[in-house]
Length: 349
Ligand code: NAP
Ligand code: ZN
Image (cartoon, rainbow, N blue to C red; front, side, top):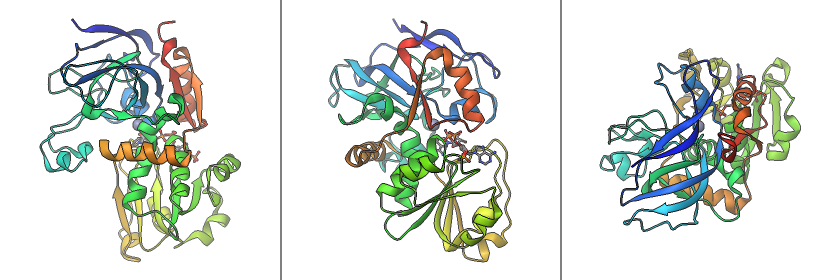
């Protein structure tokens, strides 16, 4: 018999959340049951529930930054035991056979990765996410949270952390590499911390200077307001790598122009609308435009270990379940410092 678990449930694009339940399956041999302690609020949750990325099926419980404690294991589980501190990120299954899965890049599974919420799994059941008190996941899609990271500040690493770590590694952020991070919200602030720890020269490109002190504290070498043309002018042609975390429409030509010859503008931010750019912005300096999507399980574990080693965690504001609707509005207004994390014990309270 599936277990009914308290959860925040979205029933429409407009909200508010209801305190309801989701069903968690009985354990299969490879499954672990996780008591969720904290769930981060990602802008993707908002895009999804508000229908900005296409139609969404309700009821839906979002949440893919999950940190908790293993409370039960299936008979075939080998890597986790009851009491272990674990995390679950953006996906909970994949085909395990295609070249991408075999390469540890399950997020690009050719048969379609099974996202943590809102995807029909191989068993025909639609997944439901982490704004809930418990989840059941195959151990192959679970990662270990190092002891030195508290669960609340570790939760956002499961999406925001890996989403920046993966492209920073792929595009070789390190000493002598000039990295720009556009937007300093949940993803962006993790990008600043990780790029700094990798040894890169980091510049935050934010709408205003209102978060400058924080950015410098997170490890940025420079912090520039994109609204200030005067400060932007000297930056033309000065970056090797720019990662955009912006969730809204963005002037691509402007940011491409900041890249030096052969530089790359990598998108992780996923605005609702298609965006345009001039081909001249690429050809004039052999520039590259690219995208990146979270990271595989192996790389997610690597990122958690890296963060533990370098003392990196998310800057969070912990909220009760009753505060999530208001928190979402603050995220959309770029008024997040820098990730909301839900104390899941408050669901149903
Ligand atoms: P967030 O906390 O809201 O951060 C986005 C930041 O973008 C804001 O803090 C703001 O930074 C900037 N921004 C927002 N609106 C803007 C506008 N109109 N013009 C210019 N800048 C603006 O969101 P998030 O959780 O970090 O997610 C960011 C985006 O990445 C979302 O679209 C999300 O869906 C996507 N995402 C993608 C992946 C992936 O794997 N590809 C994973 C997770 C999330 P400033 O105030 O500093 O300007
Ligand atoms: Zn996310």
